[in-house]
Image 1 (cartoon, helix red, strand yellow):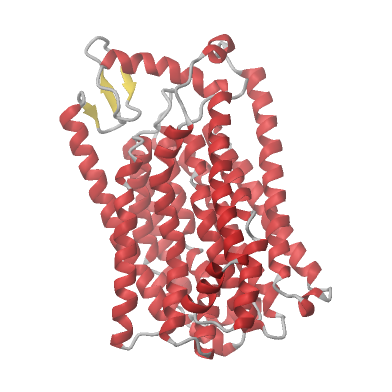
Image 2 (cartoon, rainbow, N blue to C red):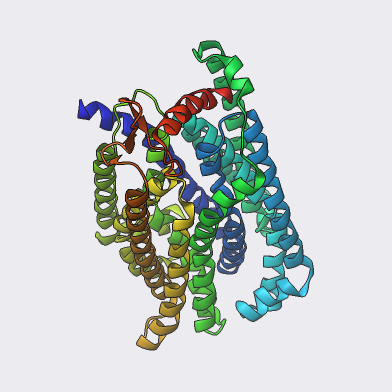
Length: 500
């Protein structure tokens, strides 16, 4: 029955949503570690800029989750994906060193952000100390992709909750030391690494346990799995990864660009530092009602990719996605539009001044619209990932970046400045990106209909002319029905070979 299908999807999504939720909470915990400092506003701005630049570098590494979810099926492919991850991180590390020790870093902090020497130097040091964070993120999400194949999302959620718990314990432990006065920016940085190390350890150990369990309970012949030839290469991984990595990079750098334009619009004054500090504490809270909706992207690759006896169809996922985005919209509207909730939360929970808390009200009201756009975008992105058509997603990043810059230049002339300017520009970028992904999905489906065998829209299946049996339509790269039938048998073996 349908209610069992939706319960299955809910059990799969809830731990992933919890992962996103606690990640946003963790950022507020990091801010709490600085709000007790003597120069709290300056430290919040320093860590906010350094952390946003680091998250820009780490964002594309999170897309290695899709690499292991969609492309990796055995040990050989796992090693290829891991090698690609390390090669990309080396490039990021080089940029971190350039930022810390060359004029490139001075250009970022002084020319772009118009900050003074003391704040700029603190930001460059923080970026260097955070340069290993992208590698941790990549490894965490790469292993998470394996676990999603097995549909043990509870392990992913448990690791995330533990991550935040460790960060909280680290923050409050360090607040009792003299470090909060001598070098306060180290407090959140140490918390980031302790949390990430804990999360990575739990996922890795959990994966080893799951692999051993599947070895003992699998019914697939392991001899076939071990002899399966793989055509995956570093080049193929990069070809699949780079479009979604660019999209994630643009999504992440949007925050950095917004901070930059908002600071420059106010000419690097005290108001500029205050506005950047407000944005630093608004972003994670604004994401809480809809951040989990991004995980809808994993549903179709997880449930429609494998040729298994599953009751989940595309119509079920579509209905489920609609319910999720409406739920996110209802929650965000309630939290951000009811007077007093926002101000009381920031003053009591984070310890910020009432003046700064009042400045967060309007930006969070704008955030209430985001769940609708994120749900729309995630549904179409999920289908394109299933089809392995990641290049079709790439233009949405360009459109988002263009609109973002246009709005940030035009709105100040209309009298909109500070944090409201930043969040309004972000909303415009989200809207254009969601529309671009929808157009890409239409174009891909149209081309597939013209060049492929008849496709069943209900469950993404095609009918082979040589066989009466329907087989799962995986990626649109196959035109011969018999070939798809053969790939069905291969995929069934590959999906279990990772456990051998």
